[in-house]
Image (cartoon, rainbow, N blue to C red; front, side):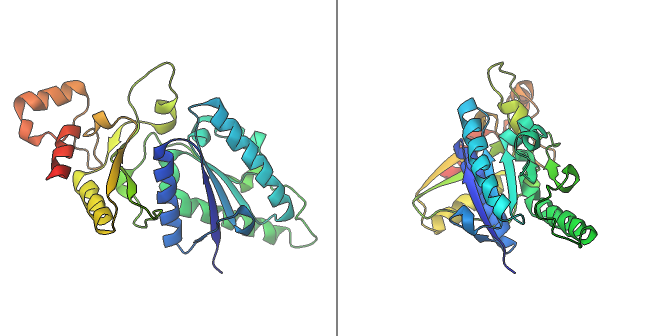
Length: 265
């Protein structure tokens, strides 16, 4: 039976692009997109922690959605993104109806995490076949939390894609931030800076142009750090590493200005 997903996004353009990737990944797995939460089997909130107001909006929305679950115990509710990474198990304490907590670095694991929830539920149901247990809250052992990675494995970027129709599109070129600004939560929620290979970025932009998009926004928490930590282990390791390459072998340096030149060819 086809399952459906409803996804609500809070926060920045990066979150919007992450949500597109999540929908692309799950629709490639056979899910359908539900426009309204009442028609969904899985409801995910992709959250933001930059401002307290964004967190409270997400908590309030999930509190409303929890009422749906009381009517439909089989419904899967999940908090994903920055708020999940920051608050981790505390989300379950505040929102006991939530089944899944997954940080930004674990988004590419969502098909497996949702399957794990279903497996745990089936095991629980088999052990409690006698009597109506729908009113009994599922224990913590039935919930799934994935927040342990220090950065997103960009080499595991899903093949499926989902885009809203229009003329503008987002393309992620890097993820994370290595800074340590006292006022900013981003390094804690998004992890280390990692970069996508240039050829993947160019291929994605070419596909978007062929599909009729006219404007592309390059995304990253710190796009000026593009070129650090490619998935294959290459790339410069920090400002001094970049300067050393500029002095010793500038032809091998792939950084943000060079990426822009490649795109402009």
